[in-house]
Structures are given as structure tokens and as C-alpha cells.
Image (cartoon, rainbow, N blue to C red; front, side):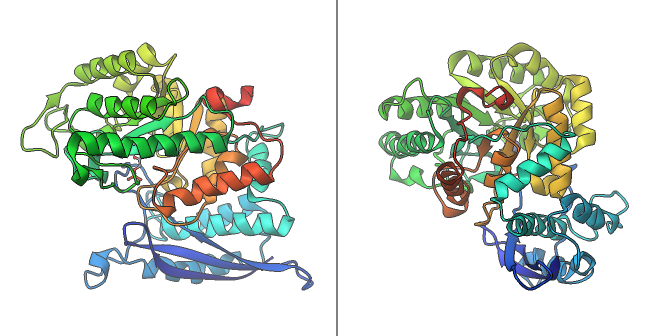
Length: 446
Ligand code: PGA
Ligand code: ZN
């Protein structure tokens, strides 16, 4: 049973407030009990359809970004409603929280998606503790229920390491937000991290030699932020680093342009120069051609949010031409929302969904979005946010649902490593789990 719940304002990796939930559980006869915590991340290039964080709006504190109201909601009405409930009954917990969402758009704006998620994740962790199983196994049980019974194979994911940062996550000229190393040719998760980290170290040397020491500073997700402007230049740097580190053939590439951030509604086009003085405007058709060129030149395995979040048609066009060999992932396009994923399935917009728990706000709703993708044969790519904490919940999540790949930034900055390090622990402690490797898009075939 849940015994007590407390909310607290803490800081995220950008030094901005977020919320933590501290939850105490007990087995009822005083033999077993425990206290767990969960912390909530926060995005910068957010999708319009995301569940809404509650921020204080008091300009005298943290420029209005304070989370005292959200923390009070956790300690108050929301948390109190969960006292006495079984933390292992995730669906009942989340249904209870959802029933208290009085926001007109049902986007959790009034109670705070941040407050709701902190509670939902803390209950999940307490549920695992109460059952005496690792968190990933508890989540695996919830996942099996979410797909209506049957087996859901757990596996270690391919870490997609965002080693060059651009877009709104860095102060350089680069429009594309993320450039991934995807070590799908490794034989284990631990080896994948070694290949990735060695390549990351080599990349620093490559950037230093080409652009100087000043360009080796890092962006919000720990990737380097050299002052380059073309995506091809970024991809070439990655290739040089991979070859230089001696890992050619084992690491594929990917990118999240996060195109909504440089889409101009007035122009109906994309401005790759959105952070520069000179505009560099491209139509959706020209963007399709650019992506095709990149996919033809580099060993690309994944592209996320290549177009504006309301442009299902252009997504569908690109999926049609490169979707066989490249996973096309919808992030802002879907916002981990079943309704939007259904729209994407109908439009054949992509062949995969990004899963961010704070985009939708509860563990159960996240599992529902995952289950829909799984039934439809789509890939699911589990993701951190650009504003993160040391909470490693998504590491257990990606293993529990057997999603096959995760992005948690570069192998740099501890809020990024907390997820990768938890995966190293899981690989060691939970015996017999396969590494997704080349099957990261279809891990059920492992
Ligand atoms: P965000 O970026 O957390 O700032 O939204 C991550 C992403 O776009 O995938
Ligand atoms: Zn994204």
C-alpha cells in the first residue's frame, strides 16, 4: 500500500526547476516497506500536442519557471488520492490520476503533467519494490497486459548517442538538432557503449584539429557543438571519427533534425539558416531531396521528425522512398499520443514512434502508445528530454517493453550517463537478455 507521498521542487540539467516525488510504501503488516523517488524531465523543442507542465509563472522566482505549485499538487490532492492504493496496480493508479484531470483539453494543464508523471513513475518503482522484482521486469509485466497478454521479449537496446548537438539545443549555426552514433554492429550493450565512447573521444580530436579547441564545448545533451552549418558536414565528422577510432562498419548513423523548430508557417518552408543572419530556405520537396542525398551518401539507419509536426504528407512521402532501409520516427508528430499515432498509421506517415513518458504524462498511457505501435509492426524509440535529471527510469522502461533502441544523449554529462549506466547494470544483473543490435527496429524478431 502507498503510505505517504511528498512533492519537492528540484533542479534539472539546465538548472531549471522540475519536480520530484518521494513515495513511501508498506506491505500493511509492517514486515516490508520502502521509500522511492522519481524525477521528471523537461523538453525544449516540444511538440504542440504534448501534455502540459504546470509552472508557477511567478517572475520573481526562476523567471516564472518555478514548480512549487506542481510539487504542492503531488503532496496535496493528487498524492492523497493514491494513499492506500496498491502501487503495483499501475493502471488503477494512472486511471485515478487521469480522473482528476480537470483541464478542458485533457492535457493535464491544470494539475500539471509534471506532477502526474512524477507520481506515476514513483508508483511504478514502488510497485517493483513491493513485488520484489527489478523495475524492468515489473514494466515487462505491465507491457504484456498492455498488449492483451502473451510474451513481450525483453532486450538490451542499441544506444543512439547524440554526439553533435545543434538546433535549439546549442548556440552554433547548425539547424539539425541531433546527430547519432548507432552502434548496431556491437555484440553487447557494454561493447556498444565502448564503441560509442571511443568514437566520441576521437570526434573531439577531429573537431579540435579542424576548428580549434573553442569548438569542442558541448550542447544540452552532451554532444559537441562545433560551429558548422550543413548536416552533411556533421555526418562527415562522424564518419571520420568512426574510421579514426577503428570502428568502421560497426556504427550506423542517424539524425533528429527536429524540423518543426525551423519550419516557418508564413513561408510554408524550412529555414536551415534560422540561427544565422543569412536565411537558407528549402521547400518540403527540397528537404525530401536533401534527406535522400544524405541517406544515399552515409550509412543512415534513422531519421526523426524530418518535417513539421503537422505535415503528415511529407513524412509519408519520405517514408515511401527511404523507409525500407531507414527508420522514420515521429516525435513532435505524435507526442506519444495514441490518437496522433492512429492518424500516422492511417497516413503511413512514418514507420516508428518516439516514446517520451512526459509527452503524455503517465506510465500506462505510454504503454498504450507503445502497444499500438507494437501491434502495427512499427519501431519504438525510447527517449530522454533535453532537460534531464539523474533519474534512470527510461533505462528500465526500454528493457521492459523490449523497444530495441534508446537515446539518452552523448556519453557525457551524468544526467545522460545515468540511463546508460543503469543499462550496463541491467545487462550484468538480469541474465540472458539479448542485445538488439541490427534488429533494433523489430526487436520482437530477436
Ligand atoms: P527536447 O528534444 O527534449 O528538447 O524536446 C528532444 C527531441 O526533440 O527529441
Ligand atoms: Zn525529437
